[in-house]
Length: 320
Image (cartoon, rainbow, N blue to C red; front, side):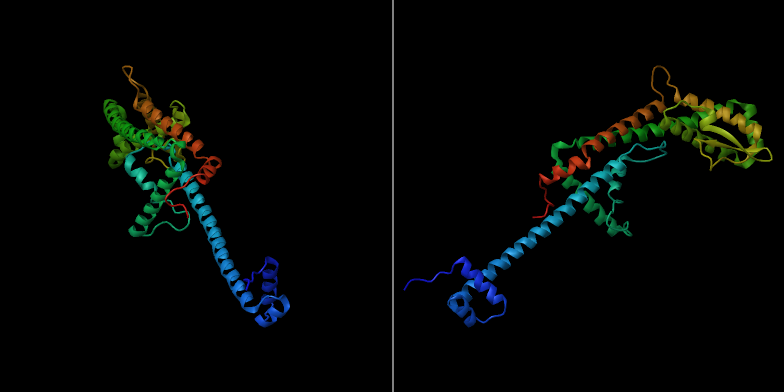
């Protein structure tokens, strides 16, 4: 007895009638396919259909997960570039290694910042994994050595800022002590606030120099170091175009003399000696280097370049 086979058209008829709720006996009468064979072929078709639906569902999930993965990597790249900008003020402290390590403790695009140490460690671990994944996808297409070069430039900037702060304090205290009449007037005016005023002047001069570096201009006392009359001919010193802060109130004429004094100190700090660059020149060079590195990273990590690169490559975190 020849084995009975079912054609594709017969199977479609069986499926159509069975999907309408018909019994196997009725299916046999309407399609001419023996009910046992119809039942066997229909159940086999159902199994294949389930496997195919599961495969398609998994493909859909994998596509969505990969899209999320790619968005996360693009987000990490954008965050890194944005954070590797040159500082806008001269530093009074800092550490290059801690700065880079600390970057990953604050990038939380999908939720609130961590509330405790455990959450912070998880966030850092997650961001480091994403950063490693980004490097795995991009490989040599992105010059990742630039991150280390930026860190080196930042470390030099911290060292040179420290040198400038120390020199500013030394020059200010030395020069004010030599200007005996000005020093006496300042002590008589401020009494117990004299030492605080010296500290304020040093910090103010540093702030003014930082603003001058940022703007790419030479020190001009009418722009970066100035006196503002408050009331009853009393004035405060302002630094770096800061219109909100200020030093203790003092006689207006004394304030103007201190403006001139601070401008002299600022110019001294910004001028090199014996063919050596000044601390201000060194800091300016460090900041320019950081700006250049950020610009190059910004160009190589542009989203329009990054997404196709991620699509063509795989990493350990890519969905299967």
